[in-house]
Structure formats: C-alpha cells, structure tokens
Image 1 (cartoon, rainbow, N blue to C red):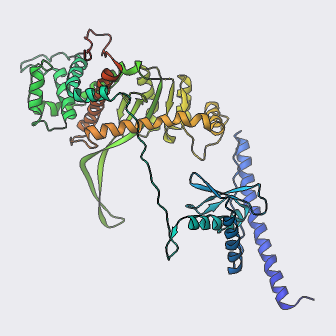
Image 2: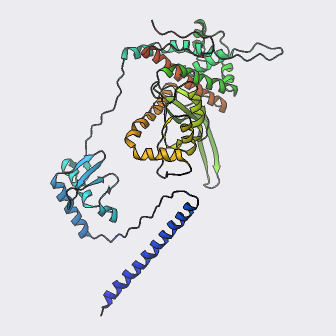
Length: 473
C-alpha cells in the first residue's frame, strides 16, 4: 500500500508522461501532414522535428560533481585547441573526443545536448585556461594575444611605384583614347550655338571624379589637359553638371566602363566575382511617424552592382539600381562575357537562386555560390540540386574557389578609398552617373598599373580606328 507522498509522486509522473505523449503526437501529426502534402507535389521533403528536452532541476551537488570531474580532466593535460574550439577527451572512454566552444558555451557531449547546461568538459577547458594564464580576483581570465596583420607582398615595387608616380599622366592619355570612340550625336536643325563635343564632356566629367574637386576648382586641371591636346575646348562648369544630370549619359558611361576593362581580359585567369555596395549621398529623407509619434530621418544612398576580375580588380560591368542583388546577375554576366572569357563566377548567398544557377549552367560557367541553411534538394530544379550536392559534399574543393569572391570587396575598397565613399551630386540621375564615372576612373587606374607591371599595350574600341596607348620606353 502506497503512502501519501508516494501516491503524489506517482500521479505527478503519470501526468507528466501523458503530457509528453500528447506533445509527441502533435509533433508527429504535423510532420505526417507535411510529408503527405510534399509527396502530393512530388517534392522530397526535409523532416524537421522540434527539439524536446526534459531538463531535471540541477542541484548544487550535481554541479559540484561536474566541476570536480572537469578539474580532473584538466589535470590530465590532454586538452588542446583547434581554431576557436577546444578538444577534450572523454573521461569514461578515452578514445572519444568532444569539442567545446567557450564563446558560445556549447559542447558536443551527450550531457550538454540533454541538459543544455555546463558540463564537465566545459569546466575542464575553463580550468585549463585559468591555470595557463593570469586570473584576477573576480575570476576574469587575462589572455595576451599577439595578432599579426596579414600583408600581401608587392611583386615588383619598382614598377608599382612608377605606375603611381605617372598615374595621372597616363589616366589622361587613356581617357582621351577612350573618349575618342564616343559617337557625337547629330546636331538638331535650327539656329543656336553649336553643341559641345560629347567626348569633351565625358573627359571633363571623369576627370572631375578622378581629382575629387568641385567643378570650379578643377578648371585649371582641364585647361592643362587642353594644353596637352586632350581637350578641344574647356567649357563652363555648368555644362559638366548638366551632362551628368542627363539620363542619356548613363548609357555612355556604362559602355565606357566595359570598354575600359576590355584590354585587361588578356591578364585575367577566367575567374570573376559579383557583388553590390552602396554610396552615401548628401540627401536626407525626413518624415513624421504617426505610429511612434516622432520625427524620423534616413540618409539616401546609391546602390552599385558590379562584376569584376579577380586578378586585375577591374570592373567588367556595372549597373546602378536599387533592385535586389540576385536579379542583376544575368545582365552583368552577359555584358561581361561580351569582352571576357568567363569560366567561373563567385558570389555570396544573395545570388543563390534557381534562375541564377540555370543561367550559369547555360553559359557553361562554373558556379561557386554558397547555399543558405534552409536549401533542400528539389527535383524540379536539377541544376540547383546538383550544385547543392557538390557544395555539401566537396567543401575542400569549393572553398578555395569561393575565396576569390573577396576580390570584389577589394574592388569596392579601392574605389571608395581613392574616389570617396559618397557622391557630391544631389540630382538622382547625376548620382547614378557619378558612380559610373568612379568605375571608369578606377578601371583606368588598373590599366595604368598593368602597363607598368605587365607591359600591357591597351587598345580601346577595337572596331574603331583608335591608336593604342604606349607604355614607358
């Protein structure tokens, strides 16, 4: 016969078991419904179950026992660090190892997976760190780490220094040759003064971005360029402003971006990367939020999408639009393939869509785009499914190629460091054209470096009769 306390504990355990069974039935029924719906559409589902843990109340005795066992593991001296995690041997089965992450307070042992609390392996790592380093009165660990900044050695400092010494001189010559291929539109019939040459306007606009001066203060530079024969006429600064604010200028500058990077295709190794970045403006949007009852403000910015080479860091194609990243990949790839031999393309997860994978497969381009955590194999998209399996099963082959994507971040850093991370214009169309002019100036700087370091003899507009720009003798 049970006493009163025994009956109470027995009833509590039965009620807990009944509730646990009801919860498991609800989880299983939800997943069975998902399985039937998925099979109806002939899609292989990914089974996911909620994490259900029953955590017993931890007493001070159990915590002290785990701490003491952790101290014993630390005394064994077999703990070692791999990356940001620690490898701790099992106390009962020495052949097994567990990974402890001190920063995330996590461990791969069954005790932590069940309790989600501090286990003996975590205590062992803390003791190991404390015994090997300085600990203050509050138990804070002071660790002195010497971080060596990774640097990249310049192959030929003499050639690089020469390219920087004569960069502005060569940029003017290259820009003059690039503007020689710009078509002059026919003059409108009627009276009036003759229109300015579009080539002179393009030269003035790009040089304004290159020297990073206002339209008035750069007039002396334009006059010096005219004395060298790069300009036919130095007009008023308002002509340059109106040219940048003209929507027809966008197509001209876009073509110049592609033509300025075309001579560098002989140096590229067929690896290209794609990404987007933003340029801040001096325009602020202000509004009153009725919901929060306060005045809100936001700084407007311009979004640039580029494809670039991973060797020369030249922008092979560019689009300025606030649209999403993934929608710009087909157009950027098509415009890049017009002048470059694209054999592989690297991009981040934002470009991982079914359509983009199909486009890259159609052009025969090797795809190195990582997948999101919720990506699953879908029989309706065989290209997507094959790339997903290759990404999951061949990480050691995927990651070195995907690392080339970091070069596009280098391109953004080069543009913003040399020509500024903001635009001066206030008109939206002028802001777009100013960003494209930054890309043209950046490509010309890359061509100048290739002239001195690789002996490149660039020629723009191959279909037109334009003299190549000779390098230093």
